[in-house]
Length: 325
Ligand code: PMV
Image (cartoon, rainbow, N blue to C red):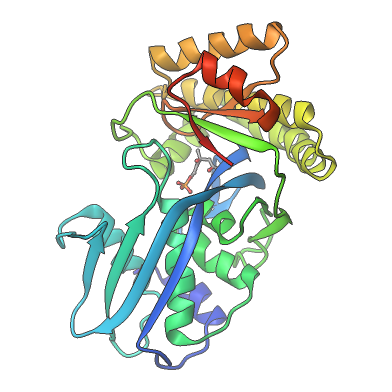
């Protein structure tokens, strides 16, 4: 167990046994419009820059945690064996909270379509942090829950909220000022279209990918400056419901992140030929007047950004799109 992470968690949670036999919570998945790429502290999952995301409605994770005689983990109704890396990661995280060697029976259901190319770790750790809070009866604030979720997976800090959330990077070494806040709970016309181009698990995970980019990409030096431009622009665009501004900055931010990844060594190229075909198609449609933008995370799948008024045009260009309100 990591002593730095342990100290941080212990300073947040009251030291008492669980007050309830179980705890349950749902958290939505999220997609960053201004990306988090790069840590300043790996143990505490502290980011180099701030980031901003939108949640994915009903797509997310439902988690129940019961006190039990021994640890167990069921995912979508199936027992996950102790050797599985997801289970090891889950219990290494829960070790941060155990008071008297209590054991947990964890059941998680993902409403994210399996292999949809959407990170389930963001919604999973946000739901686990809230389920643990309910089990122990701590009644932590949203900011404190966001810190706990962050310790599981950085992007999980933003999945505590519905709608648009900003993860403030913070400056403190102990990470107590690095948590997400809600910016706007809704934008009724805002749509995200998921284009699932590949279901393959990514070859290089985000922690290793971030480390490699930071250590070997000279372009990465300009990444914080890119975020400094995009983050306030996207925040204001959300507050003013200025979709064009949001789309431009979100797309440029995603492609800038991918440029830093591609210039790492060994190179990290998450795009597949299908990804590039979609990008070109979007650019053609935009030149024809459609207000359509893209964002992509550390994988080949594309998320389209558009407004409800354009859903028919988007659907006829991309019949396979899965729409999220
Ligand atoms: O939270 P992690 O460690 O899975 O990293 C997420 C990184 C990106 O999805 C690429 C960007 C983001 O801000 O979510």
